[in-house]
Image (cartoon, rainbow, N blue to C red; front, side, top):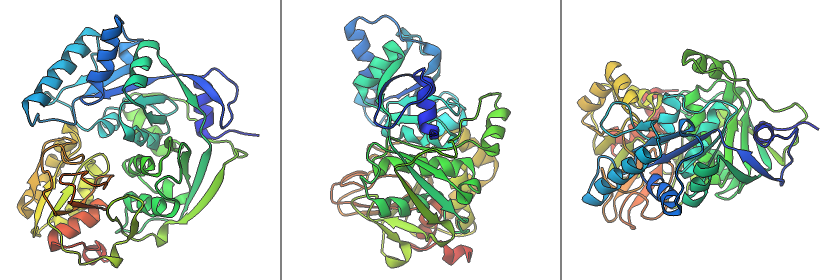
Length: 421
């Protein structure tokens, strides 16, 4: 019997010929990520224990992305502490706010090719699953687990069972990976993949660019998955070749065994919206079209990548927004690319507010917190009570296309109205 891509990566990491679902393994970790929320507490654990060095500083990277720009003195102090601890432990892969390249950790990971296909990547953030889009085993862990890995370079894992999603056909012009993700999560539920691997295959995946694959894997967190993953293909190989990164592709065996298989006709997926208060509370936009809204947010790890901004600009070009619309490129490099392509000008002329690269609004920290009763259409990945501000505010999750269309009309709008796809 063969193995899935997840099982193969974990077998290599644990120096075994094979691993099986449910097996407890000790796995070597290839890359570790911490940011300004997860970094200080994890590194402080090491300092308090008297640990003098991390297992391999070259395999650890740090970004300042959540409370940047610092909204208060507490946040500013936290950044100072992170820099102190990172310097103490020799963490030189440090992407500092306001100094060259920096931004949302999951987009930064891709932009800088910080993780390669086939690697085991553990991050101090729940949406670390994102990097599975390039074919790595990527999972988030808490402060204590991260501290342990930083000291030892390995962690224990239970090998997850794998759910296979065969994506047949091709997404239509007005439908994005975010819509596909919300469709799937709506079908299987918020715990439908609890501690499972979600593997995506098929023509629909082959037709997706890498950024869309990242979005799809990012959202597996909202189904409870341990990881989401897509086999590397020619698009993946070319991307990393251009960045001087060599790797040996890992793919699932033809006779790999899956816990369950699902089939989705991508050509029939509609623009979707996840209504409060769960990403699983999803339905076609057409069912709620016309809902009056107060704000649109386009940004985050699921909505601030260059492709996301390009799609939003398609709709916003030569049009004006009717409500407060904020757009945050996910990294500084994406911001510059969007500037050079004229996207930033399109957004500015449309009347949108351009924000710096930050996670701030996504988790309701700063840079546009929702007030009491406000309704926001957002490209972020969570819509729990109080997620983006006041507990009575409401967040509707959509694709960048739907968000842009809604910004123009001031109500929840199917982007097909503008693209005629």
